[in-house]
Image (cartoon, rainbow, N blue to C red; front, side, top):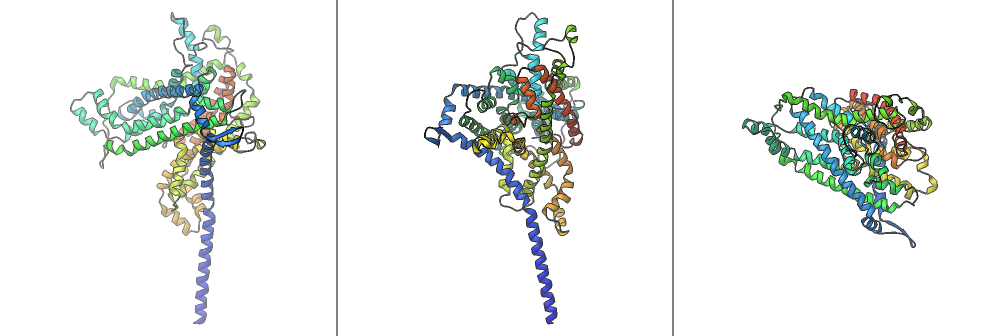
Length: 589
């Protein structure tokens, strides 16, 4: 008996020791997950905190103190006031243009018998990947009041002495920005159309109410939450837009918020006023948060507009008949304005020695001289940096996103909700704000001799990952929710820890989502100009920054040539994105 008791005690002790070892092993495996999550989300907080701290920091004869002096300067400076007024006009025009096209396109794709309407979604989504600075360059080449090719041609054909179009203005900049944002606004509005039960529309049609009356009195009011939410989201993007104001407005002294911050941070002659940069960024941060707050209120009140019930429904599509031609003309106009016209303009300018209207004599001057004159050594450096970003940013974003999503969805941490909120912040705060935060962090918080900007592309990678973490976590959250926890438990029973379950079970099951997300973020990282321009140094120049630098230096023909090379490099990635991500297209930033 005694021997048996000893045996059983030893057996229980061995089991307890094995269980303890298993718990220790699981705890050790869990450690990287919160570590990755806290480091990533800690950067989100640090970038925002440094903006607030610098905005309140004042340097004077007595040393460093804190106060509202920078905000007073911001309020009283006429140049700053002009820049903010320009931003309001620019954003207003862009919103009108974007939704004037987006709402009809969404209605055509979701509520009509438009032939081939299934192509509208992928075509406009892929169009969203075209860099905004590419579109802006094309529009300047065509419709600059002095050198614009299209304006010159019209002045030769028509009996007019002044250029009929002027893209170098707030209205012109707003038009180009609005056209560039049509695909994003379309995706958000189309989702609202798809979720809306058409029963009320059908009832009105049966009672003989005319189409435009139904549209004005029923359809658009029911879409109010979706439209207003999209307006607020697009407005937050437009207010901090840099690409188009930099290409069109900066060289013509038309400043918006983004170009004002850029010229203040990197002046040609004066000493940078970092306090003013922090104050202006803090103001825009508050504006972005207010827009987000209003957006949440709209979403919270959306139940008042709900007409989808527990029964199935199917929309009776509007038969366009002969009007289908006009429908495709509207969709085609977006593609032409965003891609076709800029591409033709850049192609023409890249092949001629100077800007001139197409003619027999001009065709005789076509050559590849502009391509030969490109500084290919610098270009290859920019391409190398862009490829590094293309590979590292989506990979690190998905690693960090998986850690955060696992903690939010799979763990029982009390902090899980807080982590999810922090991960959502980069979705609602303009990317420019994080770029400014990183800039101020490197300049103000770190000693100058550290040379943080001169040590390569690492700082750009960090900012890119922070700004993409929202997209990564949204995609992975939705994917993890659809995978039952029984599979995780089976892995634990088989002796796997959390990292093993993620590596051997969750990652294979999430591979379609991971591939789509990786391609989307890779394309965005490759084409990004705003954050790369703010954080640019001699050793971390990217291809978009090099193109923009050539453009601002007046080397328009060579800039056009490099832009075509850039688009050629992006094309295979866009094709891959379309082929592998067709089932996910419609889920964007």
